[in-house]
Length: 293
Image 1 (cartoon, rainbow, N blue to C red):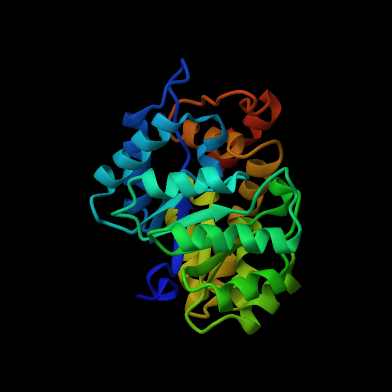
Image 2: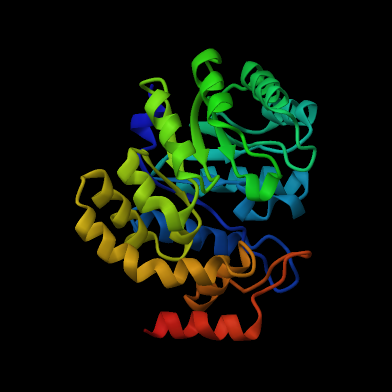
C-alpha cells in the first residue's frame, strides 16, 4: 500500500479541546472530528503538536487515540503522532499505543537535544525498525531547533524500508524541491506550512498536513484538491481569501490562533493549557472581524 496514494490531499492536525477547567473535552473533540470529515478533508492526525501533546499525560494520549478511532469509525484514515526527543521512550510508545487502526505514525524530529544529521538518521532508523506502522518524518526546525537536511531525508527515504513519507515544514522551498526531485517513487511528501502550501503543491507535493483546516476544512481542502488538479487560478482565489487567517493564526502561538477561530465558530471552548495562553484581546478582535468579513 502506497501512502502517497492513500494520504493525498488534506490531513488535519487535530486540536485537543479542553473544558474551562482544562480537562480533555471529548464532546467537543467529537464535534471537531465530524466537522473535519463533513468539510471534506482526506484524513486526520491525532496527537500532533497542534494537539498540545507536550501538556498531555500518557493516559490522556491513549484516551484521545482510542476516542478518535471510535469517532472516525473508518470514515477517513487516521495518523497517530508519536514524536519526541527520547528515542527509547518513543520505541516503548510504539509498542504500547493502540496503532492497529492507524494508517501511519507521524514523528517529529527530536527537539531541544539538537542531534547531528547522523543522530537524526539513527533516531528514525531505530523507530522504523520497531514501528508496527509506516513512519512519516516531520521536519519542523522552528520548533525543534535543528533542520533535517534534504540529504538526511533522502537517505532515510531510500535506505529505511518502513519510512514512507515526510511532512516538510522547514519553510525552505528549495529544500522541498530537492526532496521532491530525488525521492523514491512511492514516498509521500506533504507540506507542513499552511501559508506556503500552494507554491509547494505547485512544486509537486502530494498534499498538506494542516493547522488552518481545523477552522476552514471545506475551503482549505478544496484549495488543495484544485492544486492537485493543476487548477491553480481557482486554488489561488481560495488561498488569497485565507492569507489573513494564516497570519492571524500564527502571529502569537499555535494552537492559540486556530482555537480562537474555532471558539468563535462554536466548535470548542477557547481553553489552552499553560504555558500556552489564549490570543491577546486585540488579536482575538481581529479574528472576529475576519470571520464577520
